[in-house]
Length: 281
Image 1: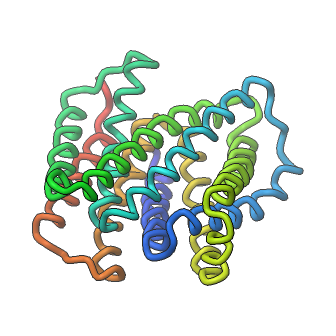
Image 2: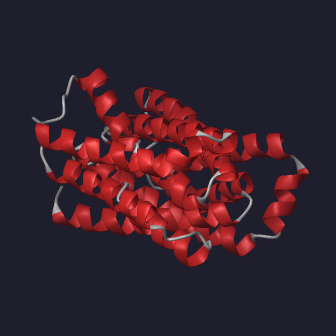
């Protein structure tokens, strides 16, 4: 990755972990829907200044919308049953594993020896964070929900990378996907939650506004980086936010800073950085 993209992705990782912490502190699904609505209102005016998607780009957008919706639903389910400091590293730390799998299936790209070491470090860190959850029903559900969320992120990362490289450019794809994704998920969440969602939003206007702006900025930087750098590198840099998530969980969510949790988070981050810095074979 070029230095500018790497620096911006580290900042995006901090913003990403922060809005996830806001979702965890509030009513998960309602906050996700509300922050999406904020993002769409900010991005909406951009649609008048960028090219409209072509037929091929519309197909990419449709697949991306399905994957984004699945990610948000899985994420909300994981946060209902697990601490932020455990669910977030699992949901985000496993993304490079799925990205590696999808890259092999779609592009026949195999990771090099150094990347395999990074992947192994991630797996060990994830196992350490999830170990307590393997024996209890609630934590087990959170574990699988977090893994499902990671699979969705790995999928939409590959799909969105293709979208940003269409002739219309990354700005057009970014604006359209943010607006459409936010509106679709808001409608689905409204049908699912009913009046409960609007009640939750009335009591959390400021957190929703902050989370929406943070999410919009983080995602826009992510798509910009995808448009000009290898997918695996961008994804790995983004997931270094697991360290920020662990810190936020301790500082603001009253979660314990156990040596095992800190060690596992560092192990995951080390694996992610290894994958990002080393070139595939």
